[in-house]
Amino acid sequence: MLRELRGLARETAVYGLTTILGRMLSFLLTPLFTHLLDRAESGVVQTVYAAIAFMTVAYGLGLDTAYLRLGRRDGRADDDAFASGLTGVVATAVAASILLHLFSAQVAAALGVPAELAVVVRYGAWILALDAAMLMPYAELRGSHRAATYGGVKLVTIAMNLVLAWLFVRRMGMGVQGVFLANLAASAAGLAMMAPVIASRLGRPSAARLRAMLSFGAPLVLAGIGSMIVQVADRPLISRISGLAVAGLYGNCYKLGIFMMLLVGMFDQAWKPFVLERAERPDVDALIARVLTYFAVAAAGAFLAVAFFVTAAVTAPLFLGQPLFHPAYWDGLAIVPVVTLGYLFNGLYFVMLAPLMIDKRTGAVGAATWAGAAVNLGVNLWAIPRHGMMGAAWATCAAYAVMAAVVWALGRATRAVPYEWGRLAAVAAWTTALWLIGARTGLGARALLIGAYPAGLWFSGFLKAEELAELRAIFSARSSRAATVPPAGD
Image (cartoon, rainbow, N blue to C red):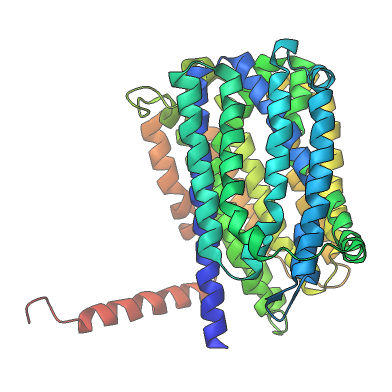
C-alpha cells in the first residue's frame, strides 16, 4: 500500500509540475503578443482560440476518458479498445476539420474575423485535428503511469510553440498568421512524438467497442461544453458586441489571473485525492469545513497581493528592458482583480464539491456547471453593452460564485457540512475593507496593508483556542529539533 501511495504522490508531483510549467510557458506568449500585435490582431487571436477551446471538447467525444475507464483492466491496455477510440476520434476530427477548412470564410465571418484572415480558421481547424489525434495516446500514457513521458511531450510541444511564435511573429513579421502557424507546427511535432505510443497500441477497431466507449464518453462532452462556456464565452461575445480591439485588450489582461489560477489548480490537484482518501472518516465533514476556511484565508491574501501590485509588475521594465505588457494594454488592467476574485470563487467551488464526490453524486456537478454557464451568458449579454470588458469580468466572477453556491446547496441534501460561515464572513469583510483602502493608496501603503491582513486576523481572535494550541505545538517541536542539531564543525 505504501509503495502505491508513494507512486501516486510521485505522479501527482510530475503532473502538477508539468501543468505549472506548461501554463507559465504559455503565459510567456501573452506579453510577447502585446508587444507585437495591436489590439484588433490580439482580438482575432483571442476569439479564434476561444472557438478552438469549445471545439476541442466536441472533437474528443469523451473517448480518452472512456478508454481510461473501459479500455484498461488491472493496469493492462486493451489494444482493440485503443484502436477503436483512436479511429473514432481521428475520423470525426478529420471530417470536422475538412468542413471547417472548406467553409473557413463563413466561419470567420460568424466569429467576426476579417475575411483576409480566414486562413487562421483553416490553421485552427487542423490544430484541432492534430490535438484530437493526441488525446488517445495521452490517455494511454496516463493509464500506463508514464508520467515523465506525458509531461515531457507536453512541455516540448509548448516550448516549441513559444519559440516558433517568437520566430514567425517577431523575426519574420507574419503577424496573426504566425501565431497559428506556430501552433500548427508544434501540434504536428507533438503528434510525431506520440507515434511510438500509437504504434505500440494499434489493435483492430471494433464498432461495438466504439459504441460502448461513446455511451460513456458522450455525456462528458455536454458537461465539458458547459465548463468551456464559463471559461471562454466572454471573448467571442466581446468581439461581436464591442469589437476585436476590445476583445484583444480583455483577453490579454484576463490572462494575468494566472497567479490565482495556478494556486487554485495546485490546490485542487492535492485536495481531491486528500479528501477522497478520508471519505469514510467520521470527521470528514468537519475537515471539509475547516479546509474551506483555511483556503479562503490563503486565497484572499493572494487576491490582495495581485490586486495591489499587478499594475506595478506589468508596467515595470521587466521584459527585456520593456514593460511586461505594451502600454497600449494598460487600460485593461482594471479587470485583473475581478478575474482573480473569480478564480477565488472557483477554488471555493472545488472545496464544496467534495460532499458530492464522496456521495458519488457526479450528476450534480453538471447541474452546477450549467448553472454557471447560464449565469455567464446572461450577465455577459446584459453587461457587455453597458459596461464593456469590466462587465464581462464580473460575469465570469458571478458564474464561479454561482457554481460554488449551487454545489453547496446540492451538497446539503445528503451531507450537513458545518461550514464556518462566521469566520468566512470575517475574512470577506476584512479583505474587502483592505481592498477598498488599497485602491486609493500608493505602493508603500499597500505593502503595509498586506502585512495588516494576517495581523488583523490574528489580533481579532480569528484563530480558535485549539488552532493556537496546535500552532504552539508545531513551533515548539521545530524549536526542539533545531536545538538538538549540533553546530557545524562539532
